[in-house]
Image (tube, rainbow, N blue to C red; front, side, top):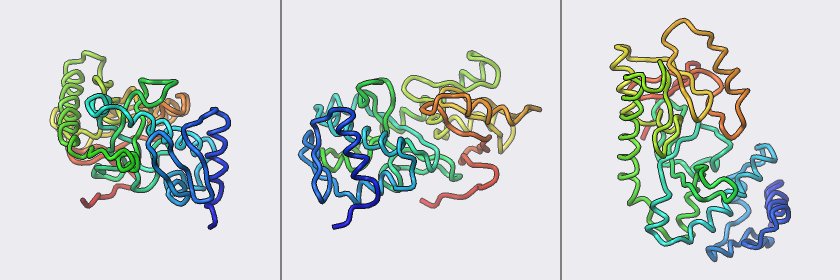
Length: 262
């Protein structure tokens, strides 16, 4: 059986460099000892495609192995660490393809899925996207929790909009609220609807260069500032390198606006 290019080397590098003993490799794939589960090489290669940079594939495999250990917790503790999380479409921080996405946001720029804290032992506060495969291996019916998680997400979107409207955090700035960063809050219709309604504009341009701040671009500004702020940020904090268009129902790139069909 042929192994997709490079994925075996990525897994071996992770196991050796991190001195891990929670997984073993075979000609067919990877066995996760923490969940007593098996992942074929073909599945891993879809989640971390050959076209990705080496470090991005290493990071994805690391997150996957860490998530397998994290998923062994009792269900009440597991649910307490979960939250809605958003990634830009095509992000290298979440499993590729349909291996992670739960709810695409209309407009084609943003996708919502499951994320959790406590997965990364080196940065326990980082929200790590959790691949669907983990739920299958752990035999957890996580989808029963999605509705409540999205409701909390929308409430935090409302609170973000209120703080913006009252100028609590500074004029035209959007900031994280509780468990949701700004990129994730842009996925909440409650926030987008409040912004477009208050500005009396059906469409608003917004810059979101990092996961910790976004700002409205409804006045004369240097749009290149968004790109500069993106490039000056640490890779794990970066969000969008160019401005976005938001409506009550969409988050889109100005040059490639699309409609997501659900």
